[in-house]
Length: 414
Ligand code: GTP
Ligand code: MG
View 1 (cartoon, rainbow, N blue to C red):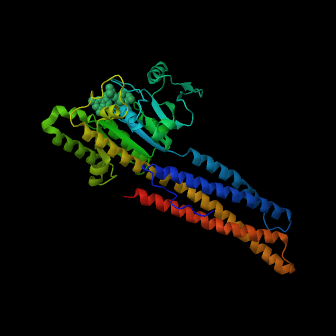
View 2 (view 1 turned 180 degrees about the vertical axis):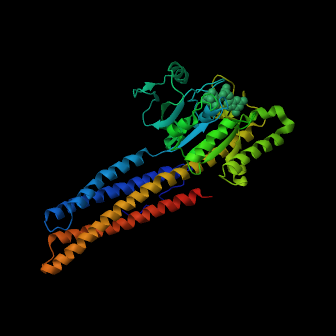
View 3 (view 1 turned 90 degrees about the horizontal axis):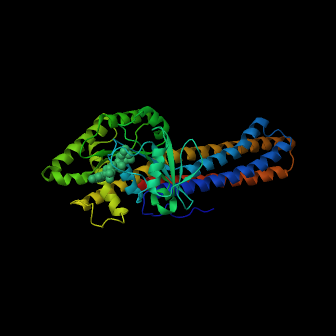
């Protein structure tokens, strides 16, 4: 099929890079799958022909390709972008997530609220449901409050993972294949290594939610140090949350902001060596109020529209949106790299294996032909046909893969 123009259309969200790349790579693997099937039919004939053009072992290997391709297609269909939120208890992790989801999905409140890992992902179903381990029986969420209390009734280990499946239709982030993971306060119950092992190794982005009234704590730093040991170059954002509280400190705003920024830079640049200072200042540390962002986006119908906003809230809302933009760029770029590079390489391997086999068969049948000086058999005609198909297939696939990755990188690399 001819290459569609603009395979990555101008969606508003940088997340589209990922979803479009996923669609394209799925098409490519479906194409490869058809080709593998055709080749298998041909190869079955070749083995039957008794001319020893193909060894039994090789034929077995090739027959397994079909299953391999099917498996890769399943993996691709489950590929997603994953972000983990963490930080000290009550810093506003759950509130930040609700703001990003534009719905009050997660229980948030004073004191220690989130008591285990909560993963939010999209479902095509119309109603939300919850999966609580060890049962795989879906439980319904009648209301969000019920979710909170249901969780507190279950005596769950802080390491365990409750999945909330929320209708994609209602939420853009979930529709675009983002999975968000909320964690218990890092100071309350931190078996850090277990957390990382169980929930963080496949994360594309980490968001540290800090209270701007306090500062980054030792526990939070330790967590990120451990993450950086396990994952090379993790993507980290720091949200200086509760920045609305600064209205009480009017005369010190700039100083406090500078102090937070300095500490963020010290940590991400000097300790973890992840970014340079300018990048941290411009793209990695944000001063926000998750509370105001939630109010603005998913207003509480029982309160008047004006309550809950502190002076200067517009600037903080803008900063929150700026964070989201950077976050979306970062997560889609990271996920495309880590997930699709692998698939692309597997696809190339499969195609190369088939091509080598075909070339081998051609060579052998040519020399056989020369020995016997026979007319072209029906078999080799069929083979020529498949070889031609394969060649054009190789070219299209390479082109498409190159086109998609170039397009994706162009769009995300700014
Ligand atoms: P745990 O789940 O206990 O670890 O806490 P958490 O980090 O998820 O905090 P949560 O989102 O539950 O917020 C704790 C309290 O802080 C809630 O009452 C929020 O309304 C409030 N809060 C969250 N963000 C802000 C903010 O930006 N400004 C202000 N003033 N309050 C906030
Ligand atoms: Mg919470």
